[in-house]
Image (cartoon, rainbow, N blue to C red; front, side, top):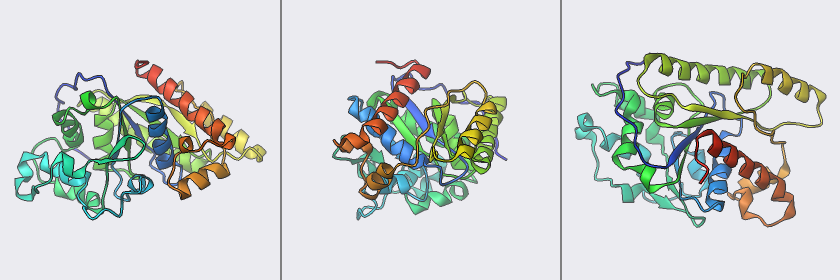
Amino acid sequence: MFSFFKATPASTGKGKLIALMNQKGGVGKTTMAFNLAHAYAHQGKKVLCIDMDPQSNFTSLFDFEDRQDRRNIYHLLVNSVKELKALHTSTFWSDVLVKSAEGIDLLPSGPELSGFELTVSGINAPRQLILKRFIEKFDLRSLYDVVIIDGPPTMGLLVVNILCATDGVLYPFVPDRFSEQGLRKILQVVEDIAEMEITSTPKNLGYIPNLFDTRRKQAAEDLEEIKKTLGEATVHEAFTNKVQFGKSLAQRKSVFQYKSSEYKDLQRQFMTMSDTVNRELGYEN
């Protein structure tokens, strides 16, 4: 499907890159990415979020989609490829980077990103390493403690770019067979990248059961059956379909922006998840 080449050495900066991925939509991937980013910010980490989904839902949660300046990560990626000089724009890092009131930086997405694969189809440089080399060019590992990447619920070059660039991946899923199939497809892409030896493959940081209905006995049985197929990777504590999630998302807030006791359990879950991810990546400072 893709041509693969040997990768350039990874950055030696301290920052960690974490992606949230699933080939199936509707599993809460963006919600998890948004709240995990705020968990790290709550710990005092310098956090950058990158929206690599053309649907821009991650960007929307940060309430930036109504900006007059529509330049986004697509323009930065295109500008980073020398062979695409004819398509370069006068877009600088500072033109695209947006800062939130919570101290989290964002590289927003836009509809142009849906044409990324076609745009780079004719270049000779390794197309699957464009994001990785962009991150290295701007030395994002040195600028940030944590970079959270939200990927699209599809298969294709954007997903391959994310998997080649990141240190580890979290896999949110709804405990049903359709979501499990989505997990299998994206895990197959990871295996394909490993076999091609183009770069180090991202670590499996665990699976996140989401929208878990504790009232249904069948839901618990389905989750236990799915766990048996997931190997030795971590299965994080299941997130129930809580009304607090819906309320916070409707107001474009993370669960950490509420002082009410009803959000304490969700806050605990995300903090625990971030601690587990830190241990998996050997980053406990």
